[in-house]
Length: 292
Image 1 (cartoon, rainbow, N blue to C red):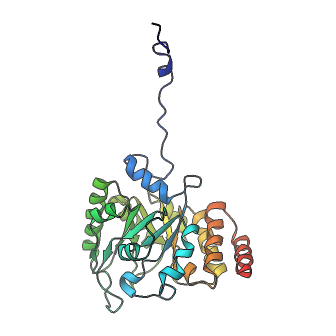
Image 2: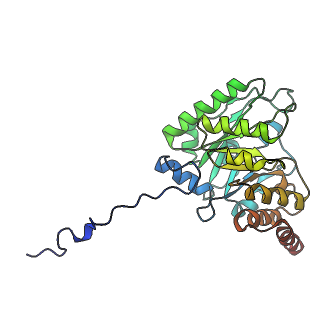
Image 3: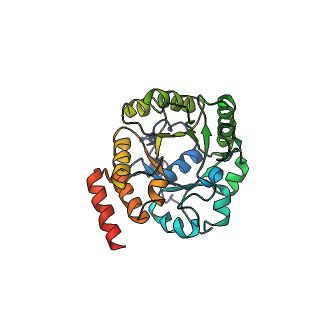
């Protein structure tokens, strides 16, 4: 009997298989599972992310705006690309039918009651991140802090565990009370974190030279929101950060402490994913706020 398909034709031997690069900076040689998790956090259409950071309670308890996460944060879940939280909050409050990517806080130790906050250790096993289907984990790195070496080794141990499990690690530049927050420091801290294996870095925005921080870091940088600012100022900071090379933001207080959190996260999304200018985004915020 004749073959339904003539031998060789459907194999397209004359067309080599394409091997396109991955769209995220410095991520093209990672394993498939690692890239798949990164693609859940960073939108493929823009290469950027709006992460909502609500991990503050791991060292400072029920932070203003996070007293009732079930009431203040769950309504915001549809509007973020990923949630940065602790495993305790994930298990106790976030619905298990949520498909939103979760990045989990993996370090901890001293509370806000202590003067020296750099005495952190790994506070979560990578096996638990796998059980929780995490899209990534985050860990503080205290470059220049009293416990600098320990925090660096905390991160490298977590990176090794993440590579075994296919889970990306976000290294966070933790700035102590006495450290200068300038581009020179953040260039140093971000580069060290990337050199030692973190798949992406969370750091603060600085007005002078932030583009040198992103340019000299070989992996994606997401901007930390920091202290609460006026809405237009926060939108301006986010706009400047992404225009100067950040792959998005990981904001908390500037969203959940806003007078209108839903309107604010929508405005941040417009800045990050649509390149909306600060005034345009603020007009969107004001319009949505007025609608209630």
